[in-house]
Each structure stands twice: as structure tokens, then as C-alpha cells.
Length: 409
Image (cartoon, rainbow, N blue to C red):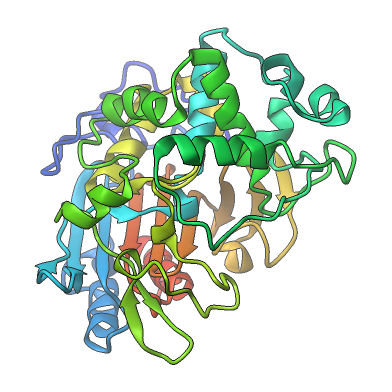
């Protein structure tokens, strides 16, 4: 991608997410790396209220296959915002635009942003090894695995087993468990070897953020990312907040007998999904450092805006965050990889070329949880899908979203 060279041009007319919005976003410049071409201000009909994408999601909701929020924004302006289903069935609370949903893995890129903020400030280097900042790791991990390896998914580390049945009772317990868990990661391939969804690659950078700043990961990200971006409905909420705060959606999880339960109110129940056997997201008192969190759809649009206008990272480091690092073979590297022209790993998220356009996205899933945010920087689109029901066909929704944004049927 080429650097932005459109100096002197009205920022609202340069490719990016600039412009005022009904959601309260501020004007911005394009993310470094977006091609400096004349702005494309077309809004495809399929993205508008009543368009093909809107009708498709409404049909899913009517069939009981979608509960949550979808949002499309173009250059910072909301084009489509729809909410369906219940955030809390027991209390009769409906999902709405201000509902915060669990992000699961869709929250993992925030640790990369935190690391790059510290690199931008000169407080660490991307070539620093694990042992530069942390103790307690095996000698080969401490001396050979770098921050770059961790963020790019090329650490060569194993994925330690997780105690999915454990019910955590405090932030301190979660912190202690995850520190010990991360230190169990072993080097099973030479650093630089691509890995596949290794949790330690998220947990260790979060520990480095804590070691460098003296703050918990949760507090650092809340202060330096969420607050800076104006993400007022987003946070690392605890289980007591999940139970009491009406603006946080509860996850509705399918059991082996086909029944559906509120996961956070039924900690003794577990998922029957073969991809998450025995898991219940409510058992976490708070999401592990580097992972998860909760966000509203407008807040994720604000994050995209802040990423593009230099609020959260300067232009060079924003480009580094989303820049393609390693190629992904077909069928891997993200939900859209199968239909992408090319897919790559970046820092904590997959990036794709789809129909000649760059797409940055991150999805996450857990029992009763489906989340995704997507950025098309060349044409100024942001798409968000947040859901709290197992039956949601997230991959299919994302394909329909991209078809609508690109104006393809």
C-alpha cells in the first residue's frame, strides 16, 4: 500500500473514515497505507436501510438465527444500524445500539495496539525478546522469541491446556492463573514459524504491557485505547457487572440436549459445540489479559476512526499494525480468506485483499458469543456484527456484509 500523499486536500474528501457522524465521531484522515485516490462517496443500495443486507439480517432474526446488532458506517457516518433479540431474557431487556457484547477473540488486536503505543514511545522494541521484560520462562523462550514473533503469530510456541471448568472469583485470581499459564508455553518450532491461534502469543504481550507500564493490562487499555478513542460503552467488565448491568448482553448457549441457557446465570452448564467443548464464558470473572472485553457497535466504529486519524497510533505505527506480515494459504487466516484474492497475518488480526480492496478484520466466538469488526480503508467502510446467540451464522453474515459494501450481488 502506498503512503498517503494527498497533502493539502480537504481531509473529509481523502480516502479514510473522515467526516462528522450521528454517532458522535470526529473528522479524521485516512489510515496510512490507504491509496491516495479521489474519494469514493458512493453508498451502495444494498448497504442502506431496506437493502439486501438489511433484509438478510432481518430474515435471520425472524427465523431465530440472529440476536444482536449489525452496523455499517461509511466515512464515519452510520448508514445502517439494526438491533434484534434480547440482551437479557429474564429481565426483558432488548438488544439495542448501546448494548455491549462480549468480543471474545475480536478483542485480541487491542494488545497489539498497546504494544505499538509503547514502541512508539520508545519504551520497548519489537525485537525485544520475552526475557527482556519478563522472568519465569524457559531459557529458549526467554532468549529467542521476540515481541514481533508473538504479535505476528510466528512464535513457534505451544498452546498450554486451559482449565475450562474453573470458575474464577476475582481479577487477582484471573491475573495469577494467566501468568502461570503463559509460562507453561514451550518452544515446539523455531521462532519465525507460523502458528495457529496460540493463546500464549496474546497473553505474553499483555504481560509485557504490564511489566513496562506498571499497570494491569485491563487498566492500561481502558485508559490509553478505549478512553482515548471515546469508547464510553466498552470495557473489561466483570461477572458481577455482567449480571447487574442492563447494557451488557448475556450469552445464550446451546446445550447437548438442544436447550438454550443464559451462560452467565448457569455456570454449571457447558457448551456442546465441538469447537468449544465444556466451555462457559461466564466462568471467567474478567477476560484474561490480552483477550476479550466488551464493546458496543458504535464504539468499534470509533476505534476504526481513531485508528485512521492518528488518535490511537501515529500514522506510521497504524500502518505497521495493519501491514501484511506473512501470507496465509487458502481457507485460513480469517473468515473471509476463502473468498479473498490474498490473505495475510498482520499484528493480531488477519488482513485480506478482496476484489481489489484491503480488508482488515477480526472475529471472535465463544458459546453464546459472535463478534466481528471489519475495516475497508480504501473505500471508507466499517462493518460491525455483535451477537449473543449460538445459532448466529457469522461467516455467512460477513460474506453478505462484504457483498453489500462492495456493491456486488
